[in-house]
Image (spheres, rainbow, N blue to C red):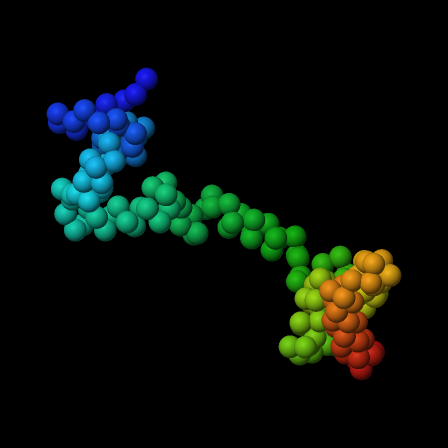
Length: 173
């Protein structure tokens, strides 16, 4: 069954949806191509609104027109989470003992890139870096990848990153 264009006295097939109201409801009318083009050309969502109403709408649109809480409100989820973290005595350098050694290191940009290449956290214990390096060597070794040059180049980058970190850790121990 074909829809007829919902424009005055038009008998063309209505294949295109056009909203009836501005409230984002599911109410729409079907228009033909020519009339939907005319409708779109003349459509102004903000028609009938003053400047203050438009500004208020745009401000509300930032949060998808949903109510928000200020960060300082007592029941804000992030504030509760943060306060609980502080109560737990979490120290950013002593999470599970993995970062206890960090105060003896000063990492430069090359070190940080190397950590990223190996896919480990900056300042993680040397033993963890070694374990990760061994896994990556097994994964990207050319013998495991039919001699593919792409994997060989990736392994070279991984080896350079490992060497960078080895020199950094060796110099600090």
